[in-house]
Amino acid sequence: MTPNTGVDEASVISNIYPNPTTGSFTVNLASDISYEATITNMTGAAVFHKVGTGSVLEIDLDAARGTYVLRVRTAQGTAVQMIVLQ
Image (cartoon, helix red, strand yellow):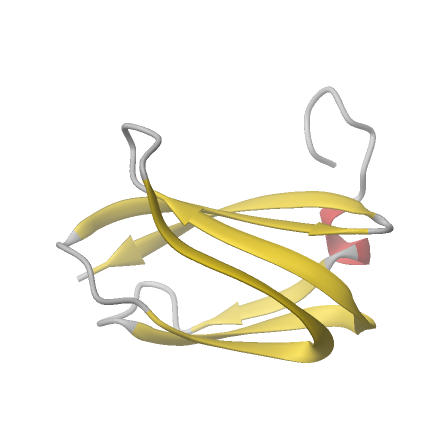
C-alpha cells in the first residue's frame, strides 16, 4: 500500500521491468485503463510525462544515471515506484 493513501499499488501497477534499467523499460498496468505517468528526479523536477490509455506503458528515459520516482495515477489510485537508471 502507498503510505497515507490506502491504495494497493498492485491495483495500479502489476510489474516494471527491467529495473534497474539503462533507459528503456516497461510498466505493466493492472488493467486496461486511462493513466497519467510522471517521472521525477530526486529534486522533484519532471523528466517524463505521459497521459494515455492502455495496459502497457513503454518508456524510453533519456536522463542522467540515478534514482527516479515513477508516479502512475489512475481512477483506482496512485502508485509510486522507484526507478534506477544505470
